[in-house]
Amino acid sequence: MDFGLTDRTAFVAGASKGLGRATARALAHEGCRVAMCSRNGDRIASAAEDLRTETGAEVLPLVCDVTHAEQVDAAIAQTVDTFGGLHVLVSNAGGPPSGMATEMDPEDYRDAVELNLMSTISLCDAALPHLRTAAAEDDHARIVMVTSVSAKQPIPALALSNTARAGVQGYAKSLAEDVGETGMTVNTVLPGYTRTQRLDELAGDIQADTGQSYSEVEAGWADENALPRIGEPEEFAATVAFLASAPAGYITGAAVPVDGGRSKHLL
Ligand SMILES: NC(=O)c1ccc[n+]([C@@H]2O[C@H](COP(=O)([O-])OP(=O)(O)OC[C@H]3O[C@@H](n4cnc5c(N)ncnc54)[C@H](OP(=O)(O)O)[C@@H]3O)[C@@H](O)[C@H]2O)c1
Image (cartoon, rainbow, N blue to C red):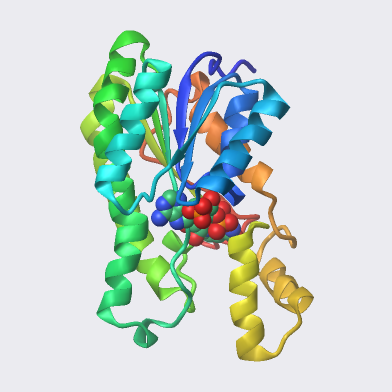
């Protein structure tokens, strides 16, 4: 299938590692020019260089903390200045700390909302004028938001994530309706347990609480899934790339789990 992404421009946030990096790679392999950001300059420069070497794609590394709206505005502006437009936005950041609902104070909740909800809104706010232009030109403008399986089926020890992701789902659904007449699509992708540094950190928290070994923690997670294993970042990234593609033009407002069947609800 031709994804129709050749010579499109994509901006991927939180892309020096993990799911964002795998997504940038998948989009570059599909022919996109890729702008990729994270907070750490060395890490994002190195990830961009690896991507350039592997794919031959035009890659723009940007230092940007997505919790600062002015940095987001500057990063999107630099992307458009460099590549001449923007067709695909992938919003993403790190995850908030783990903990039960009553262990967290209001400031922790505020930080989580800044990290996962407000960053998504800032990215969309900065990108929307350019995505509208792309949609008007040839109907190809896509927003894909990275959220979490916890948005569909909350994970008790991830109260901050459960709370912030629900907001992102509400924003995505609202935005999809609002911009639909332009042809732009807005979807969320919900990773389940996927092998990244974030997962290692969560495993470390559980090991400290329970005394379990790493492999016992991982086996416990795998047992929650219909497919009894941990996911790979490439499996997640392939779904984002499809939602960013031309053939996905009639999918909008969807919340797509890539979770090995962890979510147990019917719809
Ligand atoms: N992996 C899983 O199993 C899983 C499951 C459910 C949900 N998720 C969620 O999916 C998202 C990505 O997860 P991941 O596993 O890829 O995490 P990760 O391995 O920790 O990578 C996070 C990436 O985001 C960047 N980042 C963090 N905070 C940022 C900020 N404020 N501004 C810009 N960039 C930032 C990091 O780079 P710098 O440090 O250089 O900024 C890094 O490139 C997270 O929200 C996570 O909670 C992951």
